[in-house]
Length: 159
Image (cartoon, helix red, strand yellow):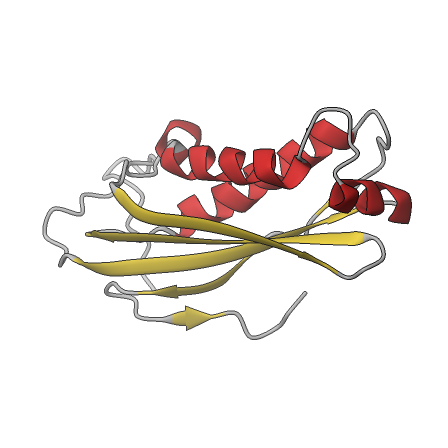
């Protein structure tokens, strides 16, 4: 596989996607926040002093996906057509965050999906850090992506 993110001087560049085909692009990513059982119980019960943790994290994830190119230097700004985050848990001490991002364009939305779940997890941490500072975020990974020249991808090993 030839990497296209370097210019003729060997320096990083934002890839020119002008000649790529416009296709529907969808990417899904996942992360986890590991915490004490009491912290998860309080998130689910809505008794965290800063407010509804998952609602705020949802908004943070959407906002972050829209601003991914401001965070990641070589990322193209994209007109996103859909962003969704979903929360689940193991009933004990792990909160899972999955994000799906869609666009119709010339480049994929993998970074937007990864940024969305990362920002949502960081928001969970921020809202709960007064209760617990040793929460752990991750692993964070791409679940799947569709569209584009490189074809579809599905993560085969669930970390």
